[in-house]
Length: 97
Image (cartoon, rainbow, N blue to C red; front, side):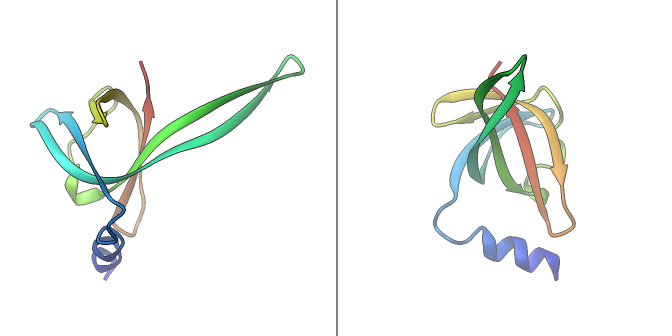
């Protein structure tokens, strides 16, 4: 049942292609790209930044690990963290270098 939820959410027309280079080699998968706005208070100063991430179907990236490269719209990011859930999705937190 959870796979049906994931498949339906990735058939909306808002998905975009990303290329992930994992141990099995490069593969193009569908993803939702997010660049979350974050603010950190450091020494009484607000530091603003974007935290890029993609949401993918877990079955599309079973062997992705930290440090793997991901290319979105010509820009290369690196996998910082994987956050799978129980509904068939995985959030992949990205770093720009």
